[in-house]
Image (cartoon, rainbow, N blue to C red; front, side):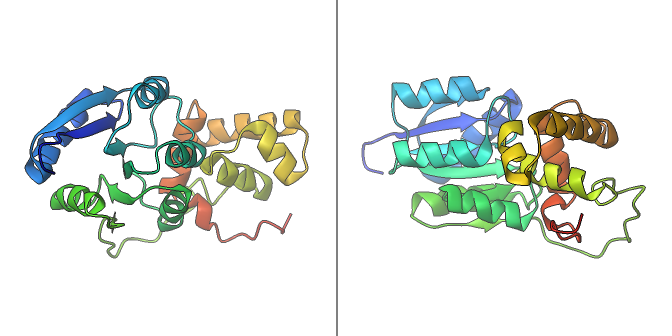
Length: 219
């Protein structure tokens, strides 16, 4: 890195996690100048103020639209490495984030050394993806898995929420009125036991909403 100190932005709404990441970054890359963001508004302000060499981004934090914001960050800062760090484990969703412009992905559920490896690899031009190791598990019943127990239309709406679409965009995609979409979203929140879109997306992604066994053209 020469005499240039790494400019790092950690975007996560948990201060303890941000402190832990800084320690890992210094182990991987030496000295670093840390800037922190706990909301999407602060993150956008930080990026507008000055570029960064590395953005470590948790996609599920206040105000962020994951795919669209990553795409926007990539266009505005083509030389900045973007490493997504999240509880997300759905491979299809991770691949979409990579296509949107992320350089790498590390699941918070992956082995402890994955973060260190991921940071080193993205700063060397790699495109690492670290997901937790899969293992055998018990069959999941619909009582344990409310995502796959949803009616087809609500399942479709949840998938599009997971992809970051607004109610207006979902209405256009599914040829529904915005008020009908709002009703589906309200029903989803109740069935999933969540109170906002970010929580619904997190729940859906972690329960395979983007790989539902239903086909979206079956109504």
